[in-house]
Image (tube, rainbow over all chains, first blue to last red; front, top):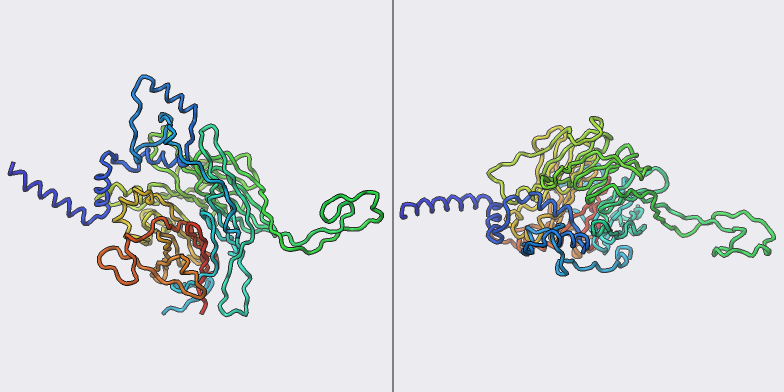
Length: 112
Length: 444
């Protein structure tokens, strides 16, 4: 047991050194500490697909019924964290998921 | 102290800008000067376009201040609903591009996420009067009271500026349009969404050619999206598009009808030991702009501005840090989504200075020839007449000096995403969230 301790300390020191040189890696460590379930591939298709969708998704009865039919005999999916979840066809929308309605248009202030 | 010259004689004094106009607006989403610089168009989140016109300079005034006043305002796009996907289509104007002027009227293209429109802006300063069958207010005259015939004449009237939609280019984009660019041939233009680029003819609205398609057969394999696209300013066969992975592809339309295969690929090699979770996200290019002379292009990624020589693909010729102090804040910037902010960039008329925005209502001007840069702030305080903008400094860490602001005090809600530079003069338009500032280099 005692033999491994100095080695561990060395590895940790090395990591600290690396992190000091690279602020990005320090920030990454911070992020991983806050969101342990975050995947390792940030630029992956999940993030991009979220970008592609952009904009409020309204309740769609077609999507809702399709999703219900699919998971009829399975448990409902657990609530996902903000960063990894996305509204897909399988997600059953609930009133809490729906975004607020936009305020109505007002005249442009630029025109005076 | 460097001497400042106006117009295209080169040499911009970066610390000599004063505010000439200031307007309050709804959230501004795009800003663009026309080819002469006389008109400045802004688009906003509510789908409106407001055009400003430069006041003709009073030669007797020693300071030659150029004020921009409201010239025309119109509703370009309305909110729509995609019933098939249950998605709202925002009316927010993503981009405005002016057409070069061919006659008395002005034309511009404005686009939201899905539809591009060609608008004609024309002036009316004469009105026909003296109709035989109608009164001046439009009511029809009783035919039995008409005993003589007269010829209607045009009489001067108060200037009226009218905007009318001439073309609507719809239903060609499945994904969200991020760019439009008018070709130098003045007949065609391109529109780019996240995965595809289409080529249109300005006269034809019922069809467009797809020239780039990067959609994978299986969406699970999606690795990058198109972030911006632009035609070359002189070569009508050449255009570039940038990606979320930090690459720029130059395509030649003479090579093939579908330009999926690039002619040139511009990419700076990355040091693998520096790679982190954030590397790809901050390398995503938010804007690409050709220089006016057509020899260079500029790209903006989250932390820097890069100038590329079109003849050299393996690395940029110049790299400028915009706000390097944010590198140690990437975790919080990821959490509050600021890391996905899309900053634009622009060249001045003679390509010697580039400009881009930052946070806290700061914007940066980077002089390529004099190797100097300055950080300025667009705020109410900077609007005071004849007051030159004061350079700002951000303190990254350690002891903060008297006039510096610390990174932690920066307001990340105050972002300058859109800026524009007059094509000939040293006049700049800077859009904060709700305000449009126009600054001019002060002539001593």
